[in-house]
Length: 266
Ligand code: ADP
Ligand code: MG
Image 1 (cartoon, rainbow, N blue to C red):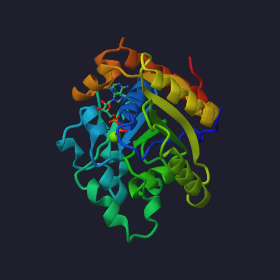
Image 2 (image 1 turned 90 degrees about the vertical axis):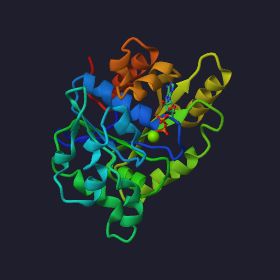
Image 3 (image 1 turned 120 degrees about the vertical axis):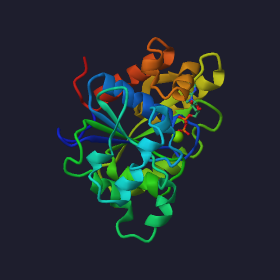
Image 4 (image 1 turned 45 degrees about the vertical axis):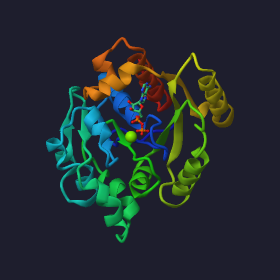
């Protein structure tokens, strides 16, 4: 198993890929929910100004007033930004309206890449795992997530050009590791929207495994309409339709992640 932080310090996982539409937000929501349903205390930080993770977990606009922007820029206690979800052990820090301006606002600031990391230090809130849903870019918000994280999880959509751009992402991870956060590791690639009837899905999966080896999770996330339906209802798929192939896959992914991170799993 990979090393994870000592107990009491949350294990911070950045979910990143500068491509849009590859399943970052879907994975953030449903992996967070599956981990929480296993009794882990999970916080999901919505670091994408589009706020899809907040919406997908039923966090309305009023509850997003103080969210990730406040976390990055204000002095408010991080614990005061946590919002409840349907799952007792899953909390969310929502994407507030001002988050869209954060990248530009922070440009001239000192230690701008360390904002999130610094706010996450010394028991900012009780959590075993913190998942960060990154925007589709390698800008300052994603950089803050990479500097705060111990691992990066990269969703890959099983479609044409899935691996295109991944080398740019791994170069960014390497450079963050060299200069800003030495403990960062590529914690794994997750194959999403896998379609068994489509040969292309299999080709992409084979390519990813040939190139990245065991860094690719064994669990495949299938293309499953229940997953996108659940999001439009503001619920994780594990609650919306627990027997769907999507719910089962995210539950399996949670088990695989916990075991890879060295947590005891049943
Ligand atoms: P990203 O955050 O990387 O931009 P999303 O997670 O928002 O990507 O996914 C893009 C779209 O694909 C969304 O509409 C989402 O509901 C849909 N989607 C993601 N994963 C699946 C899946 N496994 N099956 C069906 N639809 C999916
Ligand atoms: Mg997204």
